[in-house]
Amino acid sequence: MYTRVLPAPHPYIASALGNLGSVYEKKGDLDRAIDFYRQRLEMAEECLPPGHPDLSSYLNRVAQTYKKKNDKKTSLMFCEKQLASQKTILGDKHPRIASTLMTIGDICEGEETRRYYEEALSVLENCTPCSELTLIDCLTMLGAIALDDKRLEDGIAHWKYVLDVRRRIHSSDHPAIALQLQRLGEAYFEAMHNYPEAFRYFSESLAIYRANYGDQHEDVIEVKEYLRKVKEKMADS
Image 1 (cartoon, helix red, strand yellow):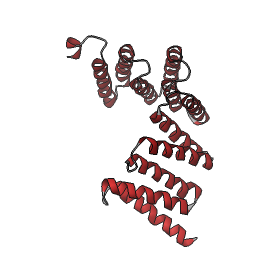
Image 2 (cartoon, rainbow, N blue to C red; image 1 turned 90 degrees about the vertical axis):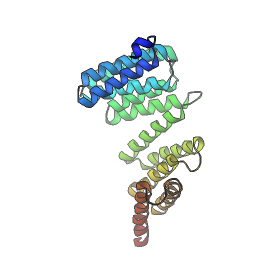
Image 3 (cartoon, rainbow, N blue to C red; image 1 turned 30 degrees about the vertical axis):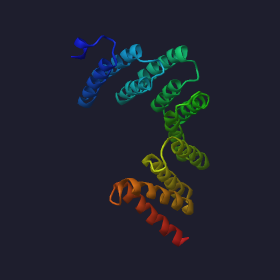
Image 4 (cartoon, rainbow, N blue to C red; image 1 turned 45 degrees about the vertical axis):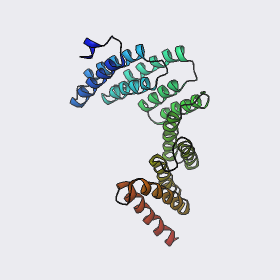
């Protein structure tokens, strides 16, 4: 219908192509899904500004569907070609470049993932203005990687930086802040075994969750259970 009433290329037609891709992905027809996702990306590149954030999410969907198909090689080749094209248009220091590096990192594993995310962080730290939501995603992943690698102080530092950014862009009672406080509480509890710090972060998280959801919400119940466990550990030590 859109193709009959709208001029091509058009963002609505691109969106419809993506919806068709999603239908085929749910049916398990990944080749058809990839075809529609690529058509969406190509059309969106024609009708959206080159730095538009939707382009990054569309590229990520193509890459992840290739990965779902166990075709890592094609996914990497596609993203690397996109990255080269983006650098020609946007230069080396643009949030979309960082997003593409993160997408490549998600395709890779282990040390390669870390390397691409660190490169993305370097790009974001030199962008003016910086995309704070992209920075949050990058630091969240780097924090998780560091904690998995037992580089605990690095992981905590990354997640504290995320908390600082969240507090800068959200109101003080935003659930995203509560979630980040909870993550820090979990890191201090499970990885660092620093129970007083875990208690502090969980308590702050609980207060914000309660202010938003009341006492019966699953997030409130989960953090209350963490606090119970922390109190037990503190009593035993």
